[in-house]
Amino acid sequence: MDTSTPHTAARDDGLDAFDNAPIGVFDSGYGGLTVMREIMAALPEEDIVYVGDSARCPYGPRDLDEVRSFVRQICRVLVGRGCKLIVIACNTATAAGLEAAQREFSVPVIGVVEPGARAAAMTTRNRRVGVVATRATVDSNAYADAIRHIDAGITVFSSAAPRFVEIAELGIRMAEGPFESYLSEASKVYIRPEFEEIAREYLEPLRRCDIDTLVLGCTHYPLLKALIGGVVGRDVTLISSAEETCRDVAEILRRRRAFARPGNVAAYEFLTTGDDVAEFAQFGGRVLNMDLARARHLDLPPL
Ligand code: DGL
Image (tube, rainbow, N blue to C red; front, side):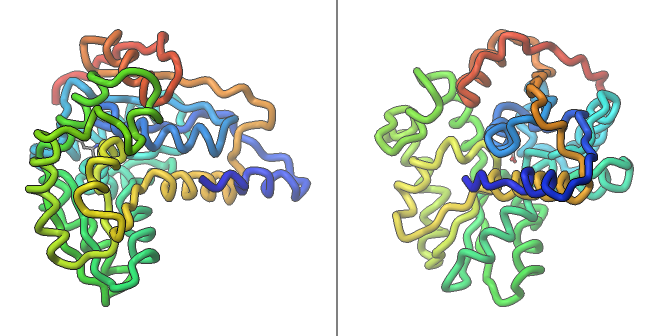
């Protein structure tokens, strides 16, 4: 990751404008933690409030209208907690609710689709890009539209991978040790025949389309990088929107002079809508490689 953040640049101009309010990040479960990891690494002085909507995970098979109402509800919680910027760290939720949230709230709200699309459009050489995502994201056409908006000459091939979220979450439960160790290619967690067979079913059709770039269009999928990469092969570049999204966060804060005050010791708050807070803390802690002992339950009224 590029850690020469614009953070420093903002402070060199002699103007003292800071904002210690937290950044809000949310997802249907653990997937958005892959985005939060990047933000924590690149902007280590920023407070973050993370909401994992585990009670309603997965979002992928749901109707976009329903997911949109979840997005608005969670954004309301984050705005109520004083967040200065909200990251919808879920592709399905971005596809369903980004526009509605941007219209409703006065703080900037960004999603993960446009950053991933931008990275894919810049990466592809043969202008044939694959997208693997949840059913809802594929059906929304969000990636195809976003990629073609950047470069109309790119052909986009999409494949829905309904079981990948379940496999990613299962892997977090089965894994031992820190996230990095089970992300590595040597990982035995995700590289097993039953998962490989499922991955081939989703990815073979894309491989046959001669893509040179594949967007991991769900924030859970970076966990499956070794599994997915093994099936599509080394010639296909995998794009995860986490880093790109994080760059957008930094750029917005820089332009708005809204970085946390230098020296701020970042505070992280973890909220889960699920009943099993201990489980969320244990498995979420694996993705972030830190102790989430202070995770708490967030009660969201049914819509
Ligand atoms: N992580 C979410 C995404 O990026 C979806 C997972 C789910 O289906 O809930 O699309």
